[in-house]
Image: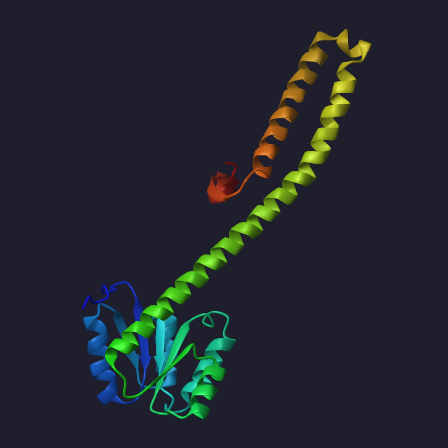
Length: 224
């Protein structure tokens, strides 16, 4: 039977006050290549979460000071941590407890005792889900940026097109044609307006926006 590849880049936070459960679980997770942080109470668990920013949290139901469900509710209310994937790991096996745990905000629910292979599989599922959510957010961000770029391009393009038209009419005036210097200046201005419109046209054709360095240490959208 093929085993899943070890993941040495992921961090898992386990919050459980039972050392007889916590220590062997930590060893099993580390054997799979995960970076494992442990905490025996909600307070230290929260501090560890803020410090290490884990990919997955394993949270017990019965914790000192507050229930695991209360901890998860606080997490979901916090804008910096509400997207973290949480697996509630507990001995409570009735349907009522499972419903309460999921309603509190747990993404998954695993009943003790369990096979370590099942936990590993659920962790991998959690990681895949979070990766997919990140990709979706990135795509939404790209679409938002693209919509802004197209909106700006349209708003800028219209007055530039009008300016180009007025400039053409001006260059056809006999008094203007009699002044070579003025014709040269207007021709140069006309060329700049055409370049601007060409650039706007490129932005309007953008399908996959990407950023490039800009002056002042900033970034800007590059036309395709």
